[in-house]
Length: 135
Image 1: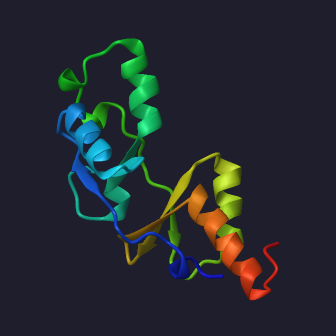
Image 2: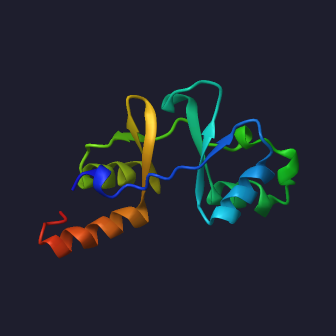
């Protein structure tokens, strides 16, 4: 099953220079676990990611004030990217090998989607319902 069949296409962005509090508000308001961080530049290779895990472990658990921290200070860069025509198995293997919870789907150096662990589980159920082998 190709990634374009089950990837999430609604991607939320945040600017690297914004205060971390902005990322927290956006993530909580939209009930999402990650945001793509825009650093100067226009390509996927110029982006990073910030996750709920990053915010909780690197800032909140340490008692730091999110209003005084820029998103760029804790964002991970570069993004892990994969082509939209890649197969389910390839994405799962990359995520396992690199111990990441999401991989961004890119086309011509533009982010067009994201595949998370829950998306892979969802795709596995779809494949099973179709009678396809998952692995």
